[in-house]
Structures are given as C-alpha cells and as structure tokens.
View (cartoon, rainbow, N blue to C red):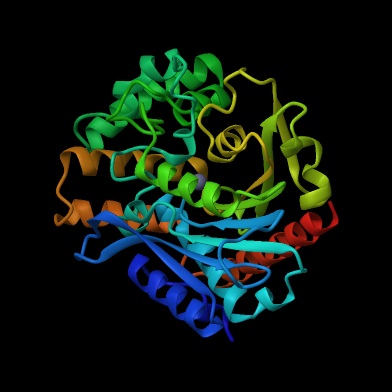
Length: 366
Ligand SMILES: [Zn+2]
C-alpha cells in the first residue's frame, strides 16, 4: 500500500474511502446526516465507526480511544487519511482487550466539503465548546482590528490597506499579540474569523451525542484531534491542553508520551475558551479525558491567515464560481493540505499513526 491509498482529493472521495475501509474491516458504521450539502450537491455526514471489545452494542468499555478528523473542515485530509490507514493496515486488530475505539470521520463535514475551517454557520468548532451558560469573554484586541481582519472588499488595494493596520498593531504590541488577537477566538463578530458562536453548533451537539452514548461506562477517554496549518512543514506537534490539576494535563505524558507539550491554564482563566478538547473534558466531568491536538505544519502562518481571511470574505461577499472565488478556494486547500508533496503526506501519516498507537498503549497502561 502506498501513501496515496489513504489520502483523498476532496471530502466526497475521503468519505467514500473511509466507508469502504470500514466495510472491509467489518466494523459497525453509523452515519449522522447533515442537513446541507456540499458544493457539488454531495451528501454530508459525520460518519462513525466503532470498535467495541466484545463487538456488540452498546459499548460498555471503561477505556475509550477517540480519533477525530476535520474539526476544522479543510484540515480534515490528514485525520481522514490516518483513520483510513488505521483501518486498512488493520491496526484495529491489535487493540488491547477492554479498549473501545471510535473513529469520527468529518466532525465538521460542511467545512471539509467546502474547504473551510469553519462550520456552516461560520463557527470555529475549536472555539465553540465554550460554556454558553456563562457570560462570554470579550476580546478587545479583536474588536479593535475587526474591520481590518475582515475587510468588506477583497482587492489588492483593500488588502494592502487592511494589512497595514494589522502590521501597525504588531509594531506596537508584537507579532504574538497580533496572532493572539486574531486566532484567540471571539464571540462578538459572527461575520468574523475564529468566531466561537453563541450556542452549540450541529457539530458540537453531534460529537457530544456520540461521546455521551458510547462513553457512558468510560472512566478514561483519550481523544486525538488532527489539525494542519501551524508549524514547520511536515512537523507534527502534539499539544495537551487543559485545566491545571486535571487528568488531561497531569496524565498527559503517561498517555501520550514525553513529546506531548502540556499546556495547563487556571480553571476559568479563559485562556482556552471554547477549545473542543477542554470543552469535552468539562462536559464529561465524571470521566478522565486526555485530549491531544496533533498539529501538522504546512506553510508560513501569514499565508494561512490571509487565506482564511479571504475565504471568510468569499463566503460573505464573493462569488464561488468566479476566477477570484476559485483561486481563494485553491489557496485554502494549498495552505492546509500540501497535497502535491509525497514527502509531507508520508511524514504526517507516519507521525499520526505513531501518536495514535502511543495513545492506545498509554490508555491501556493507566
Ligand atoms: Zn485546526
């Protein structure tokens, strides 16, 4: 099998490959259909494959391993390839007794199909797991820069003018502060980027429905969430983010190994507002949740950021069918998925399966 047996060109072929690999394995598939369709009219769904220790439902395992793909839709190619490889290379036959495994293919199917990071309602799913019963945090730096981050027109002149405002902010406060202002998540501008929403999205609700149903007897749940777009080309950094003192951070190295980078924050500090894995840990409070965000580098951050801003403009104000619209979509795919690089694909797949296997071994040893 070559690396191209696992990677796909678009959402529809990724879905077909995943369903075929599941059928070959004889594992159970449950599809959660999405109400909308893709750019070519294709059906969208979150497809779930389950491996239960006794192969019968309901799963009553005390240890559950979960692999998520496409939390940020367009970033879904790597996670989906890892899921397909895990099935086709028959890793599932080596899962230790007592552990069940859930593969959630295309957590955000709309974003995957439309080559967007966000969901159908322009929500960043990795900012949407906030506690909406409490007042949402204000992000004054984002509010100050909102018009420059997402200008209403997208021409070379308007982008140059907007970028100058952002550069001036970076000059005053530093590049890190600018990145945090844009990417830190915000809850006030539904037409902006990195928007967390004001209520749970379809994707959040569906993920939680699946987890509460299949993890009802679980004491330990390890979740591997695949991302792309930040870091050095082909490098896979593993981040375990959570509240200080929580199992997510105190046991992170036991589960995921020494190379996992632990990022703990004081509960309620707002540092991780809306992150999916910290939100899941909060919502599944009776269970120890060990989240791992595996992030693969592609191209420089400013290229990624400009592509995301252009894509936001396109969906609000532009025309998908125009040459400009097609160029913006091609750039979105390029910055999140260097499809033409065999080396990139081979490296990210090898790292994905290695972290996955380490997580299952770690879970078994707890
Ligand atoms: Zn991401």
